[in-house]
Picture 1 (spheres, rainbow, N blue to C red):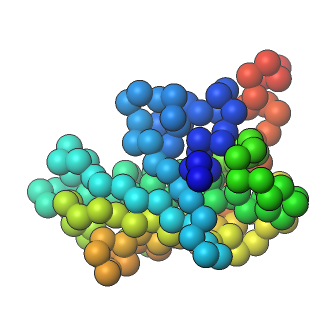
Picture 2: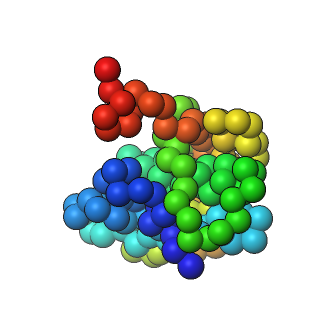
Picture 3: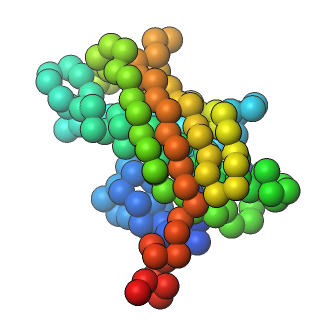
Length: 157
């Protein structure tokens, strides 16, 4: 099965966090996991905040990219798009709220989970967590909006 982000059209595949066409990015990949979604990421030593711990901005971008991918997949499902290989609509972040519950250690694989708690038209609300091992270190709520025409290449005025 393709990752949600791999189903974005090429013109929307340049995101630093999840864009398959961004050579310098994280290349985060999100998938369905039961009723929710999951992505996995192993921080590199240069993703540090203070020795031994992951930078909070990186954690925010992981939640951000996972939530927009979750929003795209949830909106497609709500619209009756069931094919797992077709293109997905592109969503962007309208609001991002994070709660850092404890420092996230540098080293172990991070598991990012999401669940669309609301799908209404062009807006999706995603509740997300990041875990290191068995411990949830970050909780967040992200409001995502379908990409407006003003952000599409060729539609800018």
